[in-house]
Length: 422
Ligand code: SF4
Image 1: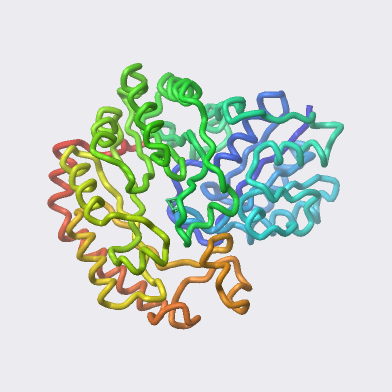
Image 2: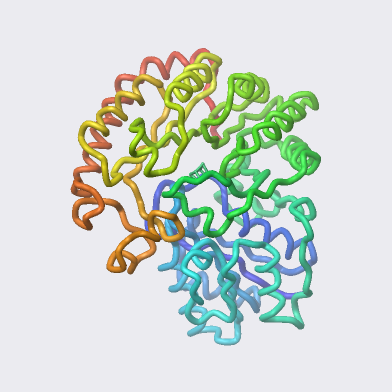
């Protein structure tokens, strides 16, 4: 059996420690651990990186292979290529015989080999990462693959907790993925470039994994599907079964969803202990929504958010400002819409042209020299200075949370806090 370190490097921009972990990083660790390899899991988005300690660890554990994730710029995370490259440089310099495999959304999007690696995986596919592991050290790692999403083992969360102290300290919380992809058409979304098809696990597989989470005592469970309600019938069916089988009675669940849902879904979600729903709305301006190819019926949005609020589900609204046709008036209208809806939490992002998204494809060549561009006056993508957009957002959010504080307090008193402290 062989010795492998699986690494998630430090994000280029550190945010608060993110809840959870990368799914491929965790699955790869689980799969190689299950077949008896010595696996060291390192997550530098939540652990401190110390160069000497890292090099000593590789030596102590007789590491033969490094598998390192290069993540992309997304709403929740940041690229981590700088630290990933630094780690590869260190390994190359100190242990030239150690093999290196790079994988991750960054590799898919840029479609380029990462410097000094033995193999760069440019697809978002666990089988391809496992193939690369076998390919660079065939005498150490057997060749195997999974025929369907249901064949992939469940993430071994106990093993993750043994390996990463941050996860051990947050033992009440975890992530679960029931489906990948979303075939919606949002032009700012870069997911289609690495996950163009919607791929879901069977209901039985999802229910079995939830049953394990229940046995292991997880309370806060974040369903990390890109869009859990993309197949609304399936989403209703899974939640209903979870309720009927009393699997989630003690859990608090969060999901991300588009707006194509109905009151029936919210009633089921309420019974299924879904405490938080994060919605992508983006704007209240029809022209901007057309630019984003986002088909939101704004009256329906309001109705759904009000209904969720009335039954005690906490709502998160995700918005974007900075489209080319954005004006002070469209921004003010969007802010008024947010107030009308009454979200419990708001995320307002400045529009980012991310490599892999449709809007990035149409950028002039001089703006394609990085993997993302924030839209602003400075680069000609709208008429607002980048800093002005930041100030506008901050002012609004400060005011909004101040105005909303009593309502939120009352909601928490009535329905409890949406997620338990770990
Ligand atoms: S609904 Fe969400 S996941 Fe789907 S394309 Fe739009 S932004 Fe991407």
